[in-house]
Amino acid sequence: MTVEKPSIRHTYSIDWHIARWGRGKVAPAPEFVVIHFTGSGNGWNAADTYKSWLKRPKASRGNTHYIVDSGGIYECVDPKKYSCQYACASKACDDHMKFYEKANGHPSPYACTHLRLAGNVNTINIEACSSKRTPVSGRPNAYMDTDFYFPNETYSNLVALTAWLLDEFGIPLRNLIMHHHISGKLCPAMWCNNDGAFDGWLAFKNDVAAIVNKPTVVEDLPEPSGSGTESGTDVAGTVRVSRGDSIYMSPGGIVVGYFDTDKTLNYTFARDGYYYTDEGYVKGE
Image (cartoon, rainbow, N blue to C red; front, top):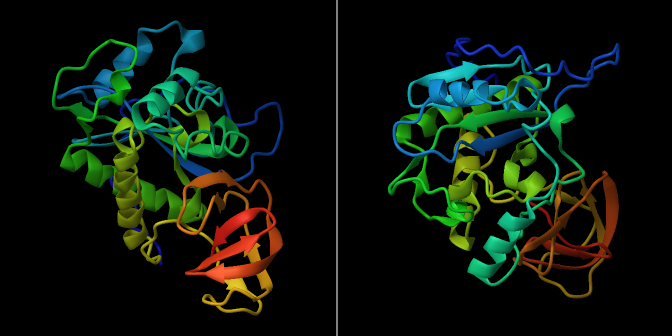
């Protein structure tokens, strides 16, 4: 299936990005699509985002490949190039992770899971303009507020653009991630700043999956291969996992890590679609 390309404007072309890889190196195809949010309140749009970048010193200006608002989709950087070094920063946001743990009683299961897998050189980044039901606050833990949201039109544009990018560049659904997966930053906050927020992220992935004609998903993991059943306790077989797939603490439990290489694992126990391996539990479909 070929996903129809949404209408994309080029109003905010950015000239301070770094050409992907540069200096004569060959650029591989991007591997991940990363979703960000502006952390802004009602009425904030692509023009406001662009102007905010222009106010910064050129050496430290932020940017992403696309800005999405309720009025449309704007390409700032060719997706075959990478945006500036701050777009997908890999340095962990310790303060955000501490705020999450204090508020929820445990660490975020998604924080920094892709710290060594995704970065500026292999990602396409989308900045989506947020709204907020109460005024935006400048206090350090404002991202913990639970009233950030994407207006309906912004959300629809974000889904359409994301689905097209996955299809256009052959990026698997499991490689659609949040900035939170890379750095621990609570971004987009409405999808990762508390335990219940992750339901919104999974719903977004499901909406994208419907367009790219893939099964509705909760986690995108490979099908198992080999012998064994899902109900026995004395079974054995193999399951193939791919770079970026999840490792679970227990069947149905929280994600405790991701694989950084493709591999085939032996499993000795299977239940409800989860396979116990030496690396931990993995999920097959």
